[in-house]
Image (tube, helix red, strand yellow):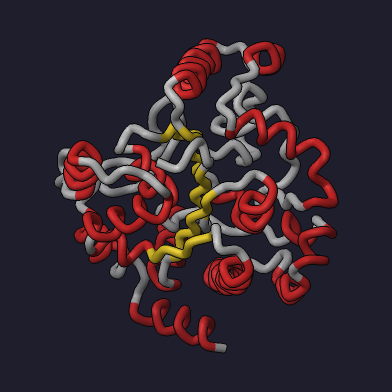
Length: 305
């Protein structure tokens, strides 16, 4: 196993990051850390996990603004939990239970020599910084446009592009994001979701080209053949593909709809992750049917323009 090298799993929300992160942690060599850059509490705004103030969704971090972020994330990937910082901010019964869980996981994981695994879609645009400055092995999940937009539509989600464009360093380093400005205030959720998908695809393709530590992985490939897909990812990340890992991955990826409690989105557990066991092949079929034929044609047209 690669010695203490942290792992970041990222990609747009609803691209399978939680599922992928949980499958990578199934082998027992990683400590799963859910969305430290999420500006919503929970799962974010927990200084015990990340002792820094998140101001935007898709917070952009680079060398020019890393003074706060580098020491904070250095603690996180070293699995050093900041108990006092957490207690100063969060003291509800839920927060205390979450602190006990994360504090124990960090401490025991560090003592056992495990590596940190950050599952965070909001780190997507900063993936290069995580690779360069923290030495992370980065996996970027990519999902086909139609099921991605369908998932967002089903959940009633939209994107607020001002959260990207109000970050000057992000626009400086990725100037093509300026093309999103006319969509601020737009009520067309399909057009906005496709625009975000296209912008993210361009950024991540560029990042992967320039950083050997960044791996692109298609959600559809992993879901269609989880055993082969995750075995390859384990090898890429320096993880041991053991009999335990294989058994846990196969069990989690072949769960029936009933035993998984349905295939819909749901926050669950103290880690506040959307992951639930599923039949991954069935999930592909379900995702393909979330848009009408007319909506599907429109997504494909917008993707190709």
